[in-house]
Length: 235
Image (cartoon, rainbow, N blue to C red; front, side, top):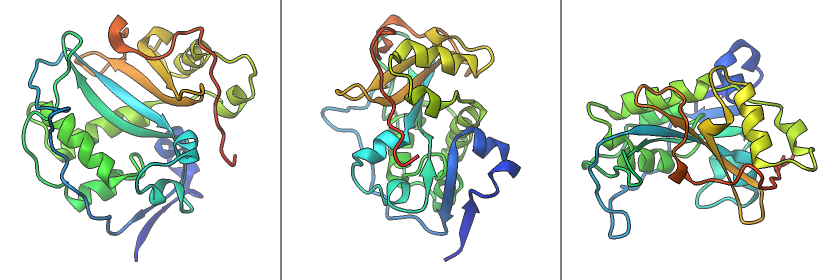
């Protein structure tokens, strides 16, 4: 099986290094993908878009207690820092659009092109079906091109140093993350954690032009004063 090898060549590929893709081999074929459909609890909801959220996941914590088929992300030689969860259209108020139109299974070529950012083919199907279909004029290729462009533009603070800070708070992480990204401030993101207080995700709020913007009060996430721990995994 042919693979696209990433890892030792990271210094020659700045966008991958900046995304903390430490090592990733993209397969020539991907696992079978199931349809992702609306349901009674997750119905179709067509609403105007008021902005967007770019959600990134702290992979060491995810792989500490992986869910579903996580072999590609957690059970192989691949190693990740932050991965791309998805790009979510937000509504004008508290409700957001979702599952706006029926969709087919993602083309394998699209999945392979972006699987080192979002290391789950099934998650990619879910993100496109639930969120991407609500972005007018977008195809799967355009949706993932847009989300990946935003993701690869991000820069990161020293997560290892932050993980060793005994009195770390969600606000401290947000400030450090903002300092690493020009034009961003701590109130333009939300930090989420597990019930035990371990870093889970960072949600970056964007305006309709995909530029960082102040998060609405209802966006959720931890209080800036909330204690936070960062799992480093084997690093």
